[in-house]
Amino acid sequence: MTSTRGLEGVVATQSAISSIIDDTLTYVGYDIDDLANNASFEEVVYLLWHKRLPKHDELAELKQQLADNMAVPAEVLAHFKTYDIKSVHPMTALRTAVSMLGLFDEAAEDMSDEANYLKAIKLQAKLPTLVTAFARVRKGEEPVQPRTDLNYAANFLYMLSGKEPEAIEVEAFDKALVLHADHELNASTFTARVCVATLSDMYSGVVAAIGALKGPLHGGANEQVMKMLSEIGSVENVESYIQTKLDNKEKIMGFGHRVYRNGDPRAKHLREMSEKLTALRGESKWYEMSVKIEELVTGQKKLPPNVDFYSASVYHSLNIDHDLFTPIFAVSRVSGWTAHILEQYADNRLIRPRAEYTGPGMQTYVPIDER
Ligand SMILES: CC(=O)SCCNC(=O)CCNC(=O)[C@H](O)C(C)(C)COP(=O)(O)OP(=O)(O)OC[C@H]1O[C@@H](n2cnc3c(N)ncnc32)[C@H](O)[C@@H]1OP(=O)(O)O
Ligand SMILES: O=C([O-])CC(=O)C(=O)O
Image (cartoon, rainbow, N blue to C red; front, side, top):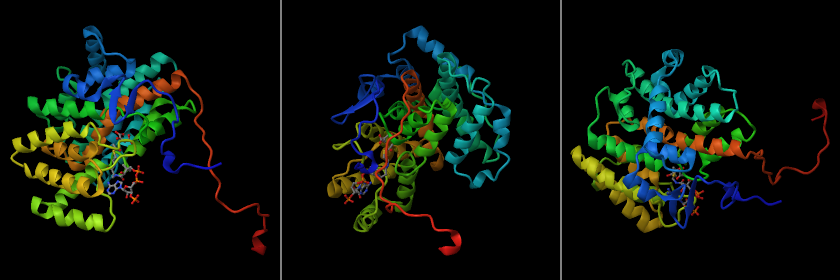
């Protein structure tokens, strides 16, 4: 038995949700460029869950269901006040809060199709409320109640700041949500599928996925990109900073990808938004620094930026705290995780691969006094 490091190139399941073929990303057969330019996030959520685009009444129903389920139990909100919230990473808090949601869902263990679909709606609806409440409570502010008249993207920004966002902010955030919604068998989605393939419940699958997304080699990279941009500080400093990292064989966050070889098709949309939004804020330097980093890393290492690179300056321009970037990724990706969980349940088989053993050969037990 020989293993493949990091399961590179291993085809571990079948899925009809999203595909990456020859560097083209599609959700249910729709090119990501088409969806990014035309679809709303709610339409994409429907697409991932139902494997087709919604009609008017179906979209209206989904929006209503999301609006109806945005509130989170008071006990979960109160729990944010039971620990030193300022010292806790929001992904750690989100992981625990989502696990707590399972405590308050009477249908948590109901494995019927209807109950599982409803759990997907509840999770999609409640994640923004959790992330924004956490962000406010740690600043000593009260959570803002969601508004039923705002769309999903606008509601998130509204609950975060307490102010109704501008149209351009909503448009950019909605597009970012569309771009992050699903991505074939990425590490967090695979984690979710492995978890629920034991026939564990959906909350367990999503908690496991949040844990996997948190790492800086996956969703955590967007926060690290902003940390890097902040450390560099100005366009003039880019070259020496990046050159030193490359000389020291350190990774540049937001670059490289396990599957894409010639570039991540999502990055260009985020790059465009970064240019527009940083200019609007009078802070074009974040975009200019990013472009210079891209030139250097792509020029020297042939590594193009991934989805996490330009999303950093986009979210920064929306006045979002840097450690909320990865929780926002989760707010979008929960649509994909739940779609994959539903798909796994629909045709389940335990996921249990093998390991190539590299330990010692057969040994004989030696009593502790004789060792
Ligand atoms: C949403 C997402 O999850 S997108 C990915 C987000 N993660 C990041 O941006 C973190 C930075 N990037 C990386 O760490 C990697 O490119 C990953 C994790 C995305 C992909 O990893 P893998 O497919 O395992 O590639 P691996 O890490 O083996 O890299 C292959 C080679 O490219 C180099 N390389 C890969 N990414 C980078 C990078 N960002 N900066 C510098 N060098 C890199 C590696 O050092 C390695 O070089 P070597 O062969 O000389 O040792
Ligand atoms: O697919 C991957 O390995 C990581 C990624 O880009 C994503 O999850 O969006």
